Amino acid sequence: MVELRINTEKIKNMISPILYGVFFEDINYAGDGGLYAELIANRSFEYYDRDGITEKSRMCWEELRGTRFIISESKPLNGVHTHYASVSGGSGCGIRNSGFCGEGFAAKTGDAFIFSAYIRAAAGLKLKAVIADRKGNICGSADIVCGGSGWNRYEAEIVSETDCGSAYLSIVLPFGGSADIEFVSLFPKDTFKGRRNGMRRDIAEKIAEMKPMFMRFPGGCVVEGRSFENMYNWKDTVGPVEKRRTNWNRWQSEEYRNLGFDASDYYQSYGIGFYEYFQFCEDIGAKPVPVVNCGMTCQWHEGLMADMDELDTYIEDVLDLIEFANGADDSVWGRVRAQMGHPEPFGLEYIGIGNEQWGNEYFERYEIFEREISKVYPEIRLITSAGWKDRGWEYDIAYDWMRANKDKAFAVDEHFYKEPEWFLNNIERYNDYDRSLPKVFIGEWAAHTSADIRSRKNNWYAALAEAAFLTGVEKNADHVIMSCYAPLLARYDHQQWQPNLIWFSNDKVYGTPSYYVQKLFAENVGEYTVESECDDEEVKQCVSVKDGEMIIKLVNLSDKCKSIRIDTAESIRVTEIKAEPEDENTFDEPEKVYPSVYEIAPSGGYEMPPHSVSVLRYSM
Ligand code: AHR
Image 1 (cartoon, helix red, strand yellow):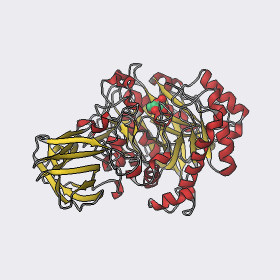
Image 2 (cartoon, rainbow, N blue to C red):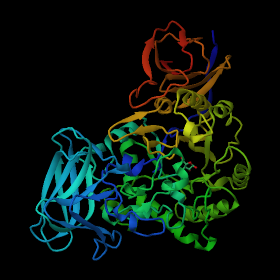
Image 3 (cartoon, protein in one colour):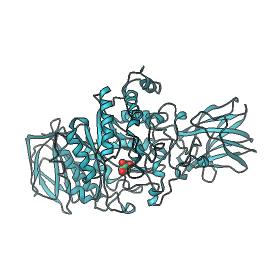
Image 4 (spheres, rainbow, N blue to C red):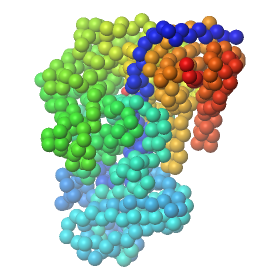
C-alpha cells in the first residue's frame, strides 16, 4: 500500500492562473497548410527564391491542357502582390492548384466553400471555379462573369455534390479567351467560430479543448528568421490580407529535410497574422503572449545582429504592437485593429523579447528594449530568454544577468528538449529556485525519446515522463508561472520536427499521449498546492485545492499496480490515462491513449494502474 500523506492545513504555494498554455509556431505546415483554413497554396503567385528571384511564382500551380500560363508583373494588383497569372487559350483552358504539399484538400458531399479571386479580363468573359477530384471528376463549381475594366474581386460559393477524397481547385475559361488572375482563395465556409479568413475548425477545436490559459506565438525560430529580410515583423501581417507580404518560411531550409520531406513550397502568407492570433486567443479564452524580434536572427545559424544604434525601429515596432493590441480605437494602431473588426482592446499583458536568445549581446539589447518599453508601458510584463539549455554558459549568463537586474524582466523563458530521463531527474528542479528572481516561463519543452529526430516517438513513455515533471512544476507554480509544450502542430508526412503535440492531415486530426497529459493537467489545475508526501519513489504526485475540492495528481512510473489509500467520506471522481510505454496514437487509432473517467466509492482505496497518470477529485 502506497502512503500519500496530505496536510490540507499547510498551504505550500499559490498556483499561477496561467500555468498551462500552448505555443503556436508555423513549423510543420502548422499555419499555412494547417490551422489557417485557406486551401490554396501560393494563392497570390508570390512564392519566391530566398534570393528574391521569382521563378518559383508558379509553384503549386499547373496549366490545364492547351493553356498558355505565364507569370506577369505589369500593372499588378498592388505594390505587395506584384505577380499574377496570365492565362489564355481555347475552350477549357485554365490553371489548377495542387493545394498544400500537393495534397489538395478534403471535400465531402454538402461541404460549402467560399471561392474568391481578383480577375482582370474583358467584360463578359466567362470563367468557372471548379472543384474536382484527382481524376478530374467534378464535385462542384461556380460561374463567374467578368465585369471588365481593371482588377475586380469575385466571390462565389461552391458546394461539393459528391465525396471527392482529395479535391483540387481549377479556374477554367470554358469558352477560351484570356484573363489575369490574382489572389485566388478557397475557404471552407465552416471555419472555427465561423470567422472569415478563419481557422480550420477541427484543428482549432482540438487546441481549444485543451483549455489553454495562454498562447505564445508566432514562434519560435520563425520570429528570428535567417536574415533581416526573413525576420517576422508583425506589421507585415495586419490589414487586408491582399496587402500582406509573403515571406518564405525558414523551416523550408534544406537542413530541416532530415525527416525526408521536401518543404521547398513552405511559405508564410501571413493570412494568419497578429489580428487573427489575438482574435483566436480571445476565442479560446487564452491570454496572448506574442514574441517579438529583438534585432537578432537565429543564433543557431547566421546569428546576425542589428547594431545597437539601429534598435530604434525594432523598439518602435513593439510600442506600436502594444498600441495595436491595447490602444484606443482612435490611436494610430488601435484604429487599424478597429478597422479590422475589433474596436475593443485585446488586453495584451505579456511580451517575449526575442525567442531563444542567449549571450551578452542579447542582454545588451534586451536592456534597451526594456528601458524604452517600460517608459511608455510600465504595466506590460516582459519576458527574457535563458537560451536553449537547462544549464551551461548560456544559462549562466542569463541567470547572472537576472541576479543583477531583478526588476528588468517579469519572467525568463527556459526551453528543454530532453530525453524522458532528464524530466524524471528534474522533477524537483524548481524547488530551490530563487523566488526573488524573475519568474519562469517554460516556453518550449518536450520529452525526446531519441537523439535522432527520425526515431523520436510521441509515445506514452515520453508523456509519462512529462506528466511526472509537471507534478514538480505545479508544486512550484508560484514561481514557474507558465509552461507550454512544443511544437504544437504537425502536418503528417510533411513535418520538419518531431515529436509534436497534435498531428493532422487534410481531413483528420488527433492528439498525442502528450496532448492528453497537457489537457488533463490544464483541466485540473488548483488554486493552491498543499503539503503532500508519498512514500513510494515510483509514484510522483501533486496535491492542490480549488473551490473546496481536493485535486490529487498521481503518476505511477512503475510497471506494477499500486494501491493508495485516500481518506475521504466523499466519492472520488477519477480521470485516468493508462497505456503501455510504447503506445502511440495514430489516425487509425486516435484514442489508443485516452483518458477514462469513472467514480469510486469513498471506500478509501484507489488502484493506480501500471504506467498511469490519474487525477482524483473529491469535495473536502
Ligand atoms: O519548437 C521548435 C524550435 O525549437 C523553435 O522554433 C525554437 O525556438 C527551438 O529551437
